[in-house]
Length: 273
Image 1: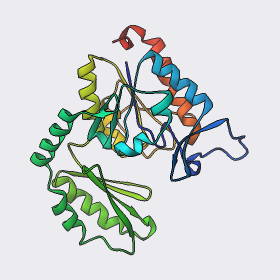
Image 2 (image 1 turned 180 degrees about the vertical axis):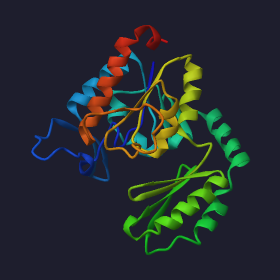
Image 3 (image 1 turned 120 degrees about the vertical axis):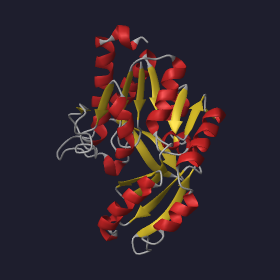
Image 4 (image 1 turned 90 degrees about the vertical axis):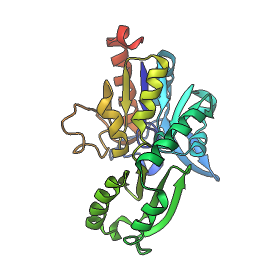
């Protein structure tokens, strides 16, 4: 069994994303990521213990939009719960024992060249809509996809919806997640990477968890799809039975891991492969 899980706001949380109910006592938490002296990400101590159990019983596969370097900042996955493989860059990179799979990189580059408009041409088209009164900064992730930090309140949301259609015709997926506006080539997606690993390992059962539209492709085909209650998938996932968590935010990770372990115990024969 593979447990393929998104990280940010699914397994790990910044303090502003805790979403604890008013009056709730903060649970025991652990800092698992720092950057330039700042505390970035946390998990509850209980979630870490549950994840250790998951890691012992099945293949835990982190699947994240983070770049390789951003993933490597998470000390928990470098020092304590060390997965054999991880998917980073929204599926554009597969790490095997911490090293990028060169064959997968070449395959992704070839698919991008064959099916997606060049990033330079897409950015040129987007520049007609972009304006510095709502675009705060621009970044490229592992030379695979682009995202903008935006002021969503000032952004032209209707025009962005129209541009989303144009981007799709050009072979790119646009996704607005809070302050981040992503443009990702269609071949760079989480499920294709997970499916590649599933086939390579000879596994038959995949549980998957994620909170955003970039996770939807993975949840749509997983044997056990789970989304945290706070995610943006409530409407997008209609027509597919996706399990929900009881809690929002930080505590949702514990709910997800308990559901995965329960499925493992219920389907031991299936999950063993």
